[in-house]
Amino acid sequence: MSLRAAVDNGYELADAEGTLLTAQECETVVLPPSVPSWADVRMAEKQHPLTDSPFYRGDCFGCGGDRAPGQGLRQTFSLLPERSLVATTWTPDPELAPGSDELPAEHIWGALDCPGGWACRLFSDAPDETVTAYLATTVTKPVVLGEGHITFGWVISKAGRKHTVGSAIATRDGELCARSTALWLTLPRRTT
Image (cartoon, rainbow, N blue to C red):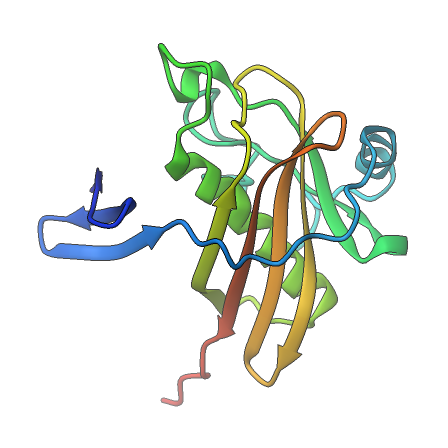
C-alpha cells in the first residue's frame, strides 16, 4: 500500500489494485467544544482508561498501545464522562517522520480518526461494526513531534445507522492544531 499526493491538495491511498481512498482538506469542519485541560485529561487517564474496553485493539495504528514506537500513533484514550468526551495526552513520536519536526498530514488524519470512533461507540451506542465513511479535516497549526498534545473526540449527532462525530488535536496549552468532522456508519448485519 502507498500514500501519494493526489490532485486538489489531497492524498490518495492505493495498492496494486487501485485507489482505496482519497483525502482532501476541508474548510467547513465544526469547531470543537472547549479543549479539555491537560490536568483533566491526565486525571481521566488514571480514572477512566479505555484499554479494558471490548472495543480496544492494541494493534490499531491510531490508538493501539501495543505498537512499537514509530510504528503507530499510540494514542490511548480515556473517558471524560462529565463532558461526554474521550481524550488522551499524546506526544507524537519523532520516529513517525524522521528528519522532520512536524507530524505528516496522513498521520494527522489518522490521529483524528480514532477519537471519533471511540466517541460514537461510547456516547452514541454504535456497535463494533461501525466504520469511518467520511472524514473532513482542517489543519490550522503544525502538530510538532516530541511535544505534548491533547487529542479528543465527541458526538455531534446520531440518525439511525449514521453517527456524526468531531475530533481535534490541540497543544498541551489548549491551542487547536487540527479538527475533523466524520461520519461513522454502522454496517447492516449480514444474514446467512
